[in-house]
Structure formats: C-alpha cells, structure tokens
Length: 219
Image (tube, rainbow, N blue to C red; front, top):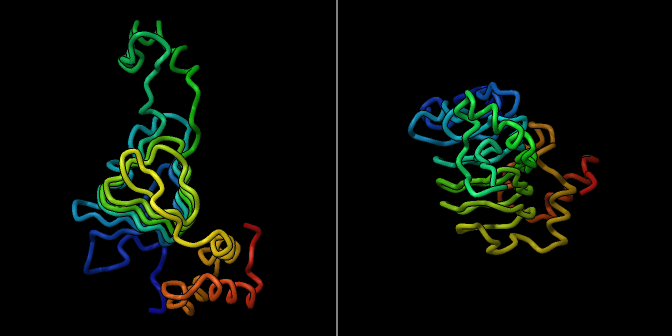
C-alpha cells in the first residue's frame, strides 16, 4: 500500500481508536478534508455526536486536510450561544410552548458568529475546545486543554484558557512560502513521494517541490 485510502474509516486496522473523519461524518454541516483523523480510545466513530456540540443552526464546521485531532477535542457551535440582551441568559425558547412563542424572535435576532473554519495541517492537542465562529489558520497548533475563543493565525502555536499565541512556528516569509506551496493540495502520490520532506524539510524545500510541479498558489 503506497498510502492510506482517505475513504477508509479505520486506516489502521490494529488501532480502531484512529478514524479518518471524511468518510465518517454524515451531517451536511460538517465538512472535513481527506486524511484528517481523530484519535480517541473511547469510540472515535462517535465524533459527530460527541465532539461537535450544539450544532442546531445553519452554521457549519469546516476542517481542512491532514489535520490531527486528539481525544476529547470539542467544537462548540453557535447553538451554544445564549441571548444576553436583558437581565437573564436562561434559554426559555428551547423548552417550547408559550415560552417559545413569547421569546422566539429574541433568539432568531441574535447575531451569528458564522462558520467555524479550520485550515489544513492543524494539530489539536488533547481536550482542546474551539468556540463558535473561530477560524484557525493552516499549520497551527492548539495545545492540550486550550480553549480557543479568537482566530488563530497560520503556523501559530496557541495555548491556555483563553488560548493565546505562544510563538509562530516560522518567520513570515516562510509562512508565505508554505501557504503558497500548499502541500495539502498536492496529488496524494506526490505527497507520498515527498512525505519525508514534508515532515522534516524546510519551507524552502517544500516550496521548491511546488515550483517544480507548477503547484504554487496565491497565499
């Protein structure tokens, strides 16, 4: 086998705790790219039910290719929001009946934070939490236990509650090189051929491969 099949739910037959998410999720509001995986010893196949929470509205969760998501990572969607216009944040509307009749307009008028969007090649540590509407850039790293409340720039390591930048993985010029090279969009065979360079090479090395194959993009 030259590379794993991205449409196989269990890419490692001996390790059912690891699942590729693209063939697993069924909700049209969850979009996941090829080779992004979730690792959880406690039924990883229930990612959609246990790790994407409060997805009641139209907002989507979009995750790119080649992301690594550790056990317990959760994405809180916009349905978790409570109105804060008045004295109480209690969600009367959700219980239906006359409560809903009297308050539905308050909920429907709440501004949305929009889709939650995760770029490519993002690593989430154990039990990270992502709040509604956050955008996480390509190549970012979210430390274990972090609560991400604001956008994360590409190739930035964040940690804490709320998560704050720890450091940028590469300088600005190299970040631009990597985003233009966009190795996650290369054909799978080319990724396989250059997997060692992708893991251990420099941004210049990866840029060179993209240029040789006319695969550079506008960052």
